[in-house]
Image (tube, rainbow, N blue to C red; front, side):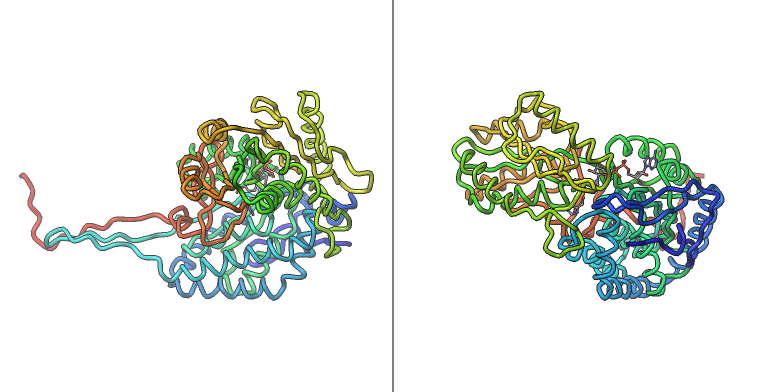
Length: 483
Ligand SMILES: NC(=O)c1ccc[n+]([C@@H]2O[C@H](COP(=O)([O-])OP(=O)(O)OC[C@H]3O[C@@H](n4cnc5c(N)ncnc54)[C@H](O)[C@@H]3O)[C@@H](O)[C@H]2O)c1
Ligand SMILES: O=CCc1c[nH]cn1
C-alpha cells in the first residue's frame, strides 16, 4: 500500500527533497488511506529546476532531431515494459480501476513518446525562392516549457506535454496536480534512464502557488496547462503578461447527439464511454446526451440494463470496472450537483447516491427530463453524472448543442452519414466523434474551442505549439539603397 517516492521532486537528473516546503498527503481514493507524504517546492527548489532546465535546453536543442527522437522512443519502450507497475501506481494515485489504467495511461504516454520521437527527425523549415534571392525558415525550440497537470490522467498528461516539447528541443519543468503527484516522477525517472540529459525533464511538486510562480518566471518561454477553465483564465492572463506561448487544455460540457436511426447498442456504449469511464472524470465527456424523442425510451431502458454491469470494488482488482472519485472534495462536488439536479426537477433514472463503503465512491447517475437551463446541463461536473435531454429536429439540436461557453468535444450517433458530417462541421468543438466517443489516439489533434482552450495536443499540430519559425532572408545580389 505504501507508495512513498524516494523524494518529492526530480531535478537535474535526480530525486531531491526540501522538507522546508509545506507537506501534503497523497490518499488512495478507494480507501482514503494516506499512501505518501510529499513537500511542495520552495522558491529554492523552483529556482533549481528552472536553472537546470535552462542549462540543459541549449545542449538538448543542439542534438539532431533523430538523436532526440531515439531517447524518446527508448523511453516509450521502457514505459511499455513497466506498464504493470506504472498502472498499479496510477491506480493508487487516482483510484481509477487497473482495468483502465493498464490500457489507457502509461500506454497512452508511451504512444506519445513513440509518436513524437518518430517525428523529431523530420522537423524542418521551408525554402522560399524569390528570384535570385531566397528565404529559408528554421524551426526552432521555444526554450523552457512549463507543464501543469490535472489529476485525472497524470501519466498521460505528463507525456502528452513532455513528448512534443522534448522532440522540438525544449526542456520542461512539470508540476503535477497536488492530488495525484506520484506518476510524473516515474515519467522523469524513465526519461532519465532512456538517456535524456539531466535537466531536460524536471518535476516539482506543489499546489496552485507553485504553478503560479513557474508561470510568471522570466526563464520560462511557454506554459501548457491541463486544468479547469477558472485556472486557465488565471494562467493564460499571467502568461500573457510575459508574452509567453500557451497551450490551454481546459474543461467542457460536451454534447453527444443520438438520432432515432442510430444503432442503439453502439449509442449506449458511446454514452457509457462518454460519461462513466474514469468514473466520469474525463475532460471531453459528452455529459449532455441529446436523444431524439423516438428512441428516448429504448435508450434509457437499455442504458439502465447496461449500467447493472458496473463492478465497483477494489480498483486494483482487474475485474473492477468503476472506481471512486479522486478525492473527498470531488465526491462532495458531484453530490452537490446531483442534489441540484433533483431540486431543479430532473428525474433520476439510475443511481444518484453515495456508496456506503470506505473511499470516495458515488454511483453512476443518469438524469432524464433534463432541460437546457438546469445547472447540471450547463456546468462541468467532472463526475459520473449523465444528463439526458430530448429533441425533435437536427436544426434544433445543433443550436442547443452549441449553446454553451465550452467547446472541447462533441459527438453524433446516426446511420445517416451525410447528416453525421453536417453535424461534425456544425459543432463548435475541437474534438468531434461520429458513431463513437472519447477515443484520443496520439495521431489525432486533441483540444478545445471557445472557453475550453487554446492550442492542440497530440498529432503533428502539437509541433506548431512547441516550436517557432525563424525566417532568414538571403540576398544573392548587391544591396540597393535609396541614398
Ligand atoms: N482539455 C483537456 O485536455 C483536459 C484534460 C484533463 C482535465 N481537464 C480539466 O481539468 C479540470 C480538473 O482538473 P483539476 O481539478 O486538477 O483542475 P485545476 O484547474 O484545479 O488544477 C489544474 C492544475 O493547475 C494548478 N493550478 C491551480 N491554480 C493555479 C495557478 N493560479 N497558477 C498555476 N497553476 C495553478 C493546480 O495545482 C493543478 O496542477 C477539469 O475542468 C477538466 O475538464 C482538461
Ligand atoms: O481527460 C482528458 C483527456 C482524455 C480524453 N480521453 C482520454 N484522455
